[in-house]
Image (cartoon, rainbow, N blue to C red; front, top):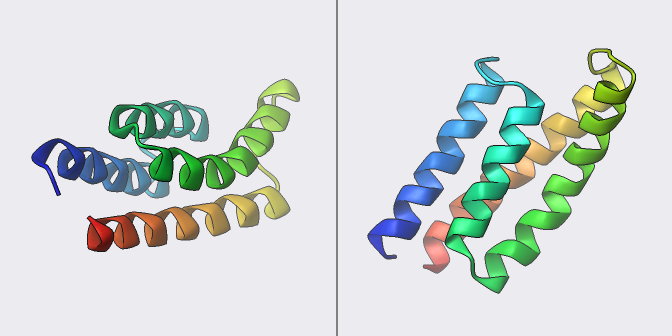
Length: 96
């Protein structure tokens, strides 16, 4: 794997950690992880990340529009998406 892609994957892993310990909001997480996906830029990455991020964007949008925190069901959706994202990052490192 090239150094650039490796750094981007490291950034993605750091973003997950920062979200999980509540250093960044879901909104910031989504913006930054999309930036990582665009920076890596290949179709495999973008096609895998989009279906994982889409539910996060939907949950985030509802919460922001309604000026509220995530409910229990939304937190479960976020946790599931984070788990999927971690798995994708791990698999991508192996593939590359």
